[in-house]
Image (cartoon, rainbow, N blue to C red; front, side, top):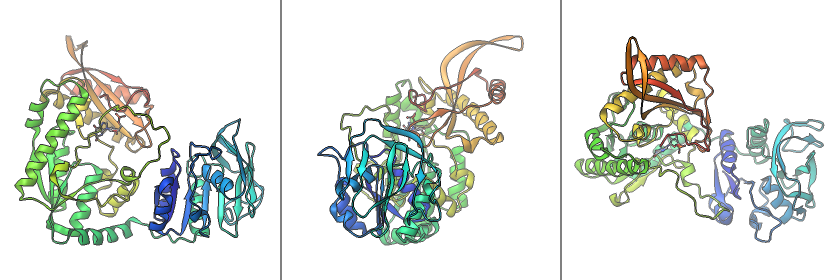
Length: 512
Ligand code: XMP
């Protein structure tokens, strides 16, 4: 295990992803709890993250001396280097010229961290982002690389196995960064590459059995990747002690509800209750136009239906949830100010606290890409595992204004054509999320000899890494024309198609 001490950098999670891609398990702990985390995890090595803070300030975050003096291998990244220098006898000064962006490193000496990757004279590209600068390094260290803005761009103490770099090896703009992190965990820290989804599957099945015993587990299945992987993993562990409940809100895409039932009930033989509550959801949503109200109604109705189904099967002892690692990492915040709710992301799989069941959360150690790998390991179809994210409230937030069954049907048809064309063009996996929206606007058109007065369909497709920021996907014009022609010809009720070129921010991915 590797311990990653988080000083609040935006990209600390990327360090963890790179360590795990190197086949080594790691956990992120906020700096204020670093000592506890160190004692609990007994890591083979420690990585110190970046930070927006400054070590030159009296209350700037510090690393516990227990860690710095532990004799374990340590890798300091950006602020992590400054912490090592500041606390181990070097010097850091506030920088006047901030260095940000691509920089060229000059490797001047070899060291255990670099061996086999970089040698003296190499000039690898790296990504810098720092304000303060190191002006003296601690005794026992030597400079192994410099850059125009950072004379101490990388420092090494081979004897103590402590290394530190001013640049960010965890981001893709440092092309050799993943290899450098891999070298640290394998060659410096001597960790074995034993973190694989195959090993995880075995270990997690044993853990689930130990936790659940002869108890009964209920799991809400949404058709998304996370809950699907939870269901298949649990079924493998405890068979018919598991019952899945699929609450069909009626807000799913074309053919999706049937797909879920076929895959899990018929293919995997999982006990599955398909609760078709679409009429109830439509009734509750009738006339509601405000996006937040729609989300709240859907979230509350979902919980009611789920609870009723749980009662109907005679109660369960455990509730399974697809909580992921990013949901449980405690974050470090230096802003402290109140944050604004842009959208209340009701995850409709959320646990109603009042159900008072114990939780089974077999994915809480995993990142999303690891969940996908586990899904493939469990034999879920590749196309299913690679699906775009789909919001809990479904198509209800893709129809601005009030929701009716007729509008849902129109949108389902348009959306199906759009996704079909994206798949046909081989673009599906390049896009983070693509969908159609149905606008509450009518415009005039002409078809054949007649005048039409129908609704507008908006097309959205974005690229993104984590959904927090996004760019509109640059389709070829011919592709968009083809989709527009098909939608207008094949979907009654739509006579105009527009493409949304807004990025996030300032837009959001969904329209509501
Ligand atoms: P936005 O629209 O906020 O979307 O840019 C970012 C990501 O979150 C998804 N999303 C939701 N997911 N319940 C969900 O489970 C919601 O209410 C919700 N709203 C947005 C959206 O699809 C995108 O992937």
